[in-house]
Amino acid sequence: MNALRKLAWFGLLSRQTLSHILIILALSTGLARAHEVRPAIADVTVGPAQIDIVVRLSAEAILAGIDLSGVSDTNEAPQAAQYDALRKLPPDKLEMRWSELWPQIRKGFTVKAGRPVTLNLSQVTVPPVGDLDLPRDTTVVLTGQLPPDGSPVVFGWAAEYGALVVRQGDKETGYSAYLTGGQTSAPLPREGAAQEGLMSGFLRYVSVGFVHIVPLGLDHILFVLGLFFFALHLRPLLVQVTAFTLAHTTTLALASLGIISVPAAIVEPLIAASIVYVAVENIIGTKLGWSRAAVVFGFGLLHGLGFAGVLEEIGVVQGRFVIDLIAFNVGVELGQLTVLAAAFLTVGLWFGKRPWYQSRIAVPASALIALVGAYWFVQRVFF
Image (tube, rainbow, N blue to C red; front, side):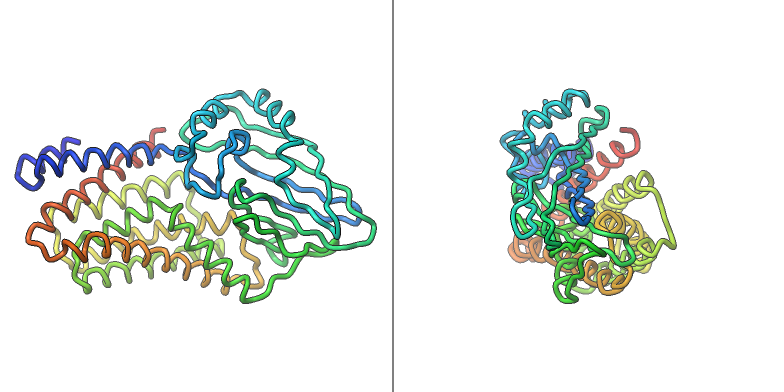
């Protein structure tokens, strides 16, 4: 806040522009505290006569009736207040609420083995109330009796329940699918695990990588925008994006292979710090050089570790590790290019050649990015 006022004092911002930036900052701060919508993860075991499903999900969002297919955080939903109230419930109260409403919730689950299969609720486990600014993962155990004909099983749930990762078998030879929009899994056999076609698997991981940037990767979006506001010329942008891509591709591969491992408690604050650094360099007017490229490369290594956390959660089948890794990275790059294209079409194309572009747009935008990044850093380190 004080940094913005200093910019206004030195004539880099008009009072009107300052007021606009402050409004945006308030909105961005709310977004930084938003309750992130993450995909649910279902581990499915199909036996000769029974299906067992263990699902890690956001029970509060489903109980509140939030349409998770249309929001990236619960604060965007009309039922945000109801979600927050449920988030404050102790575990036993929330478990009871889920059990009471299970007959209605069950209608959103799809299990078919030639014919519909009824799922029964076996167990609900809710963690204690923690940081109210973070989602709480509830574990739900479901079972269903299968017909004796040996037919494979398809599983999924309603689009409004959000994205769903379905896993069957182990990481070496198992099956993993990222489902959205009410999709169902491939037929899951009663012995072994389902097999997915090469092209469909490739496209699926491209989609996962893209979605991790747009709309879910707000911290990565802000970092890419920090690169964009450094300079509108093609060469500086190309050098920075290339350095960032090479770096995050390297650590994404190494972390996914298990060669390196850094706790999220370290990675996430450093990613926030990287946002602050590149934005502040934009403000002080650092010229493109090897130092800037090296810094961007170093921060790209951190972002690659963040990307690897997504792949670890979804799961990569070892037999097609390279293909899935390439596909995910392609999706990430497409997401980054989408952010850059959107920034150019909305800002650079119209105002980039104005003499006041740097002082009235690039610098204020960078200041806003730096402030949000600083807020995240403090939140991730201390809260």
